Amino acid sequence: MSEKLPTREQALQFLRQSGCRQNVIRHVETVSQLACKIAEACRERGYAVDLELVEIGGLLHDIGRGRTHSVHHAVIGAEIARSQRLPESVVSIIKRHVGGGITAREAKKLGWPEDVYVPRTLEEKIVCYADKLVEGSRRVPIEKTIDHFSYELPPTAIERIWKLHEEMLVLVGDCDCLP
Image (cartoon, rainbow, N blue to C red; front, side, top):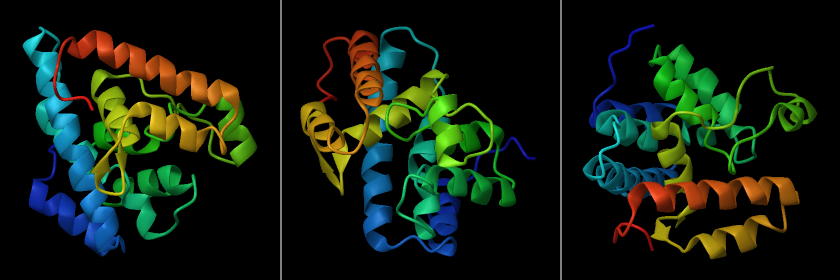
């Protein structure tokens, strides 16, 4: 697989080719913009972060939504990304962005391939977190997202989202990039 990241235009074309509707494209553009602001705040505080990977990962994180809007869009999206020969760093962002991450036990219950579905790298965490702060194409506070997810996800999953939120607050410090 090529380690060269697609351009922004190529990423948007991949989304369209994969069947993503305009509302999904607006969502991923908003997530990508917010993720880039968070990444820039992290960089300003001395953290090494790949801004280009964050931008492209933010754009492509929901590529699987062209085929399904269920939680399985993460796995399907990773498969689409691999079929497009996208770098593994992008594939990982796609498959690890759901909730605050999916544990091995949860993945097994979902029938997913054995793999890691919890964000590990800073770039994966940033995109995952930015996605939790965007509903449709609007920015929302984390409390609104958690309230929404609390009806769908087990308490352990909600705890992972809170933990990700707390980690991001430490990383960005006193940044106006968060709602």
